[in-house]
Amino acid sequence: MRTVFSRQDKVCVYGITGRYGSFHTKRMLEYGTNIVCGVSKNVSVREVHGVPVYNSLRNFFEQHGEVSTAIFFVPSQHIFEAFEDALLAGVEKFVIITEHVPIHDTLEMVRAVRRERKVLIGPNCPGVIYPQERLKIGIMPEKYFKPGEFAIISRSGTLMYEMAKILSEGPGLGLCLGLGGDPIVGTNVAEAFEIVKEHGFEKVLIIGEIGGEDEVRGVEHALKIGFRPENIYAFFAGRHAPEGKRMGHAGAIVEGEKGKVWYKERAMIQMGVKVVRLPWELERMVI
Amino acid sequence: MKVQEYVAKRILSKHGLRVPKSIFVTSYSEETEEGLLRLGFPLVLKSQVLVGGRMKAGGVLFAHTLEEAREGVEHLLAKSIKGEIPEGVLVEELIEHDEEWYISLSVDRTLRDILFIFSKSGGVDIEEVSTREPEKVIKTTEITDLPKIVQPTAKTLLEVFLEYDLTLLEINPIGVSNGVLYVLDAVFHVDDNALFRQSWVKKSNEEHFVRLDGDVGVIGCGAGIVMATIDVLKELGFEPANFYDIGGGASREELLKALNTVCSFSNVVVLNIFGGITDTLEVAKGIVEFSKSNPQIRLFVRLSGTHEDEAREYLLENGISCTSDMKHLVEELLNWRSGKVGENRVLQTR
Image (cartoon, rainbow over all chains, first blue to last red):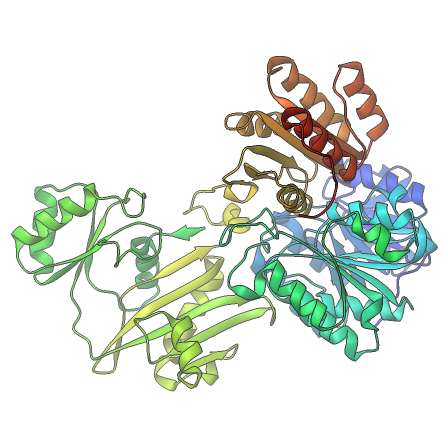
């Protein structure tokens, strides 16, 4: 499994001719990401910010060989088709930014990446940033991600930027994975810890939220594979969310005790993990 | 989103499952009466609402005569259940049965797969059965783990689950009569994200906005940051009035819509914007436009992220102050409150 992210990654942007695709292609290029091509159904556009555009990744592959990674900005209606195109062209790592992906499409994609031992980050996520490698496969504002020792595993997008900003003023950041806010995501917290471990980071901040029990299971797994509890920090959003109401993210809904913030925090504390209650408390805790 | 029972049953019937013979009534007429007589008696009358606990709230009645049926239908048509006005009344033949079973399909977050739950102790709250007598409940991702007699039904349900993009399909109870299975009730939840290919349902956008009890309006871009803002406000003794996520990549119009919604119940609005995919300059334009026509609304603005320098400058030019981080935003709120009530300004957890 090639799960390691690095500046060597050759990246393809699906939906490169769209408003967001084009905008973020420029930002990723400026940051240093090695974007080699884009894919779009809009055949009238040949090039976006100097990046050649194809109507299928296979057409690029036949001339120039494999790309390792694909990032998707295509609308949710077409995401599955785009995913299959990338899968057939041999892509190893998929980052799906698109929100509102039908859950059955996500389930199909998760089955495919599990079967073929590939990596899917998202959907409905901010993507991946790795400051040491000047690699950004995502939409995060890069200036808040200064290189350092902390990995981030986050279910939330903007909240990841918030916490990154705080960490950037202190110990700095390593590999940051935005897993996404849907109930079913390609990479869960446990798998994210595996990826973080492969990259050699020991300190991790988890940004979780109400709903499900992924964070708790993920930390249990992390401790089994050698992470030390005192090196893990956890912050949860939604302490005051009313029960049974969906708070924006499709996955952010309290159904039963296990989905509640106090339950998750208590489980974290029992495992020896440090719980951050207010965002700016983190500043003090990591110094 | 949820689907009415009569719609769910029509779909299941179309796919070959046995449902009671029925008519759907939205107003009582001669035609209704002919329908009732064709069904015969006794009948079950079921209010078509989406809220749970319909039975306890008096939304299900039985009728043994035409007179009882007419009264019952008219009563249910006029009766709201837990505040919900029914879409109509489903009138069904009463199916005599010996046993009540339970079956459901759902998307399991941890397994990341479709989960079947089956029990021969149906007709009641399955969570209770599961806690009290877990050996009576089968939870599996494989149809072949279910009893043979229910496998064909389960197979059909799986087809429906996939074809109609459902996230929950629950039959509680399945009525069993001489080895024949009847769908006596049906709950469908359809995936909101798949409505573009499920034209038989209409879209609601409840997920972006939730009304809470307090008085301080909250708007942000991204569900996580909005939840965290609400949490911080609560910790500091404020009472948030709502949850409103304008989402990633929101435009000036979307922000205006949010502000207009929130200002209808709140005079103080906190905007916590950290733009990744969102262009904060667009947001700033929306804020200025809103503020010009609603000067009485007190806004507390935090803007960071894409185009933040231009956005802040634009706000300042138009006389609106803003901060660049959440802590300062909260300090401003505390200052404002202490100005109002003269209390000490201390930034700490309650």
